[in-house]
Image (tube, rainbow, N blue to C red):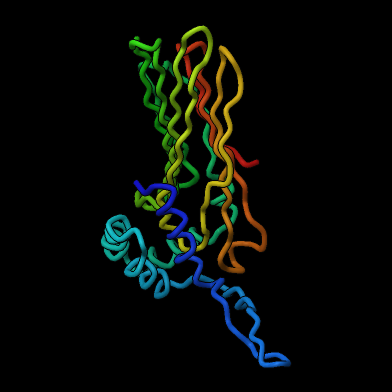
Length: 233
């Protein structure tokens, strides 16, 4: 899974629709003007993007699976990617035990599913009790992963909560949106929540004119129980 640095780089490369053109003005100065947003993502463009994506290993796996789909399903697959309602519906909420973890799958329809997995540990170390939780949320179309967001949260219990750390990563194979993490936060004492805010910027008119914002959170209840939630902000 990509690190934040790679994600940022990929987001820039993937946002080819936002590339700059230069136009001359008085005095010979050149100023940057954004390209118009394309109307719609096509099967041809999606295949080309996958073949040139910065995350080559992940994109090649998706391309291989995509090429096995019948032409009608390929068109439908690309339509799902740029369907804002589908992206907005990508949400999860479930609970479990820290050491046992948990998982959940939500069926959007027969073609699209959202899944979440949380894994955790609670161990005594030299510096106190160390708690670790990882929440992975994935959107799949025809069982092909098109977006995976992960939040990892660790902290130590010793006379209170010590050294809370939040890491985030994303694998985005949806050409219709650029997905970037914009904020980490940790709140609470005995009940501790780590939250990552994600910004999903549409790259085509078909996907909408404004960004979608989502929050992905893990909550640890006294290091025994957990809650996991992906929601629209």
